[in-house]
Length: 541
Image 1: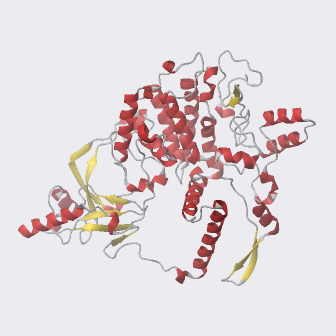
Image 2 (image 1 turned 45 degrees about the vertical axis):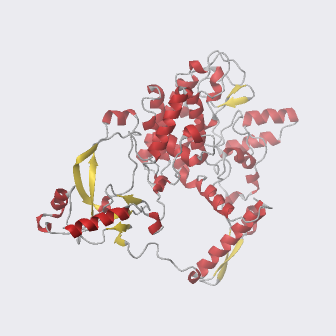
């Protein structure tokens, strides 16, 4: 923070080697990306348990239970705690973060005449002290709270933990409330939970390798370092299908609304229509969640954690600042992990981490000035075939061309036309798509005729419309039409999806970024046997 403030005030002198000039650059702080607990050290606010705990400073007042405040919109029945018994709040009445309101409240706080008034103003204003960010140059920052952003990465994990603790019945409860009164706690039954965990593990095997780490069996691994990405794929991808007919219908419908909106808001590019749908679903979800789980009971106020309220800001922040996935913690966490792997000395880890960061910047600068220091390596083996537009055929493949065989012969000839009845084809096992994914065909074959690049595919039926509408478009239940075989243009394949019982690939496009091709070792060795069998068959013919 000190270095950034100094550079903003004095400027960073940079030499432009191409034009042989020196110019002064004043860095601009746009957003502060940090998780919720760490943010309070920067913004000087009260944190998630305060009366005005929203870090975006929207003005919503919490309702007190014990020593904590919870951002419940609906007032509990027979609730008369002074300062917390305000009427029901409409989610549409929440205002956007206000820079002027923040500074007016900060002036009141620092002008408090005594300690008692200071602590009272801390509770009322949600500010505990002047923020460190105020040390930055006013013209080089958006100011507080405009530079603060929702942390969509950790939000996924917080929502997942909240839902699972409710469904497990492990959430704290106080008399007269009891787990036996929770119709949503279906995982209290150990057999149901273990069966569900096995279903998650089985379903994950149908996902492509571009999903990186697939969710493990939660019944076995949920308390053993279950990662945020695993939660996101499990709860916000596979969950709606795997919990269908397990979670009671009203709670399942509410859950699907959350998943659908989260899938929409996690895209890098969000259309106006997607933003409108997401806003409607999130607004309805928050009210339904309080009605279904909290039910106006004061003893259940702790169900309404701050993460429940944070989702109501996602669409508004998207309209103002862009897609939340673009300023989420994913990039920073990945960078920290990479730098941490390069540390060789166990002593002075932070000094070593800083040194590794400086070294990486120096290496990148040298490569930028002298590209010959880092010559480009061919990303694919010489046996790969570049089809253009980002589509590349990869091994394994047939060692020689052959006459098409069943299934799919008629579909191939129908696609190519009658003049190609004597054509021979060569089968390819893998296709790299422009998004980096590797598509593996059902029979390990991709067709590449002399003039047309095609794929032979089996078709699925249209999704069950009733289930699709009921689940807010989170569950696409289709049937495999084994007799419906089609030939399609190879470049019409956009991405790889996982097909399981009532499931589909999560709707956030970060999951579409593929794993880079790593050569022959990344391919399926079992195809060797198929090649050998194909060669024997042709020799016999």
